[in-house]
Length: 248
Ligand code: BT5
Image (tube, rainbow, N blue to C red; front, side, top):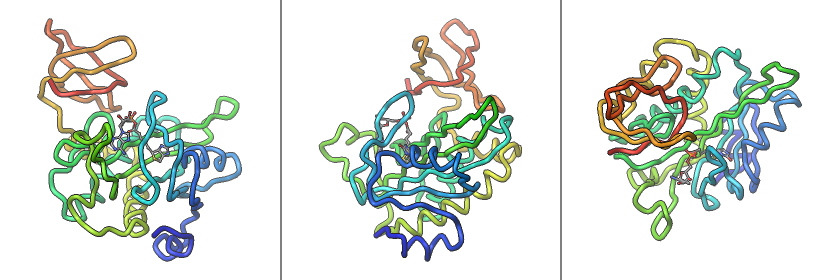
């Protein structure tokens, strides 16, 4: 069970907000930023009724079944490209520490177990008068969502399908510690290298839906700031900054 008392036990002195129900933890954290939300602060909820994915998509998580958090950063603007990487690597490490195998990253920042999505990541930056006020790193992890009969039956997975039972408050504290480590080292080569090493699609045939169309080819590499380099059917290298990748 998540509760303020339980989270105080696992998070210790870390500033946090716990909501039984909220629209989106990212929205709460975005409102907290101008009020002085500290780096490392966390917003979490038991239920999110308007959870958001990228590009206006929705995030599915019935009450009590998932870890949903928004982690506050006060980074330099130059470090913005690395924040999603830090989230993905921190989640991957947290899941691996549970003894779960087959954990990989799907470009740019999904975390998968055996090719099924277990976590989605949504970093959002807040600006004030042209200056970066802060960033909210939204993370949703499937802990015990039963996907049977949902549109995600064949593409998603929950942690408890591998290790059960799990304590969400404990899991949150462990993840927060890994986020502290990597968000303190956003521009470190080691973060990039771990992210790159975790990516499952390098060297494989992919198709990527971008806002300007679909690119098919071989995922050859990732650039230091996260762009994906794809060799298309004509042998031309294409650089993709944002999109949705699928195998084949
Ligand atoms: C993401 O978007 O994967 C980012 C999800 C971020 C969610 C967290 S929860 C805490 C914080 N507060 C928020 O409001 N959001 C963040 P994207 O790459 O666009 O993937 C979304 C797509 O994944 C959906 O369109 C579905 O196809 C699929 N999906 C939705 N819910 C899922 C789930 N629980 N597990 C696996 N796939 C899911």
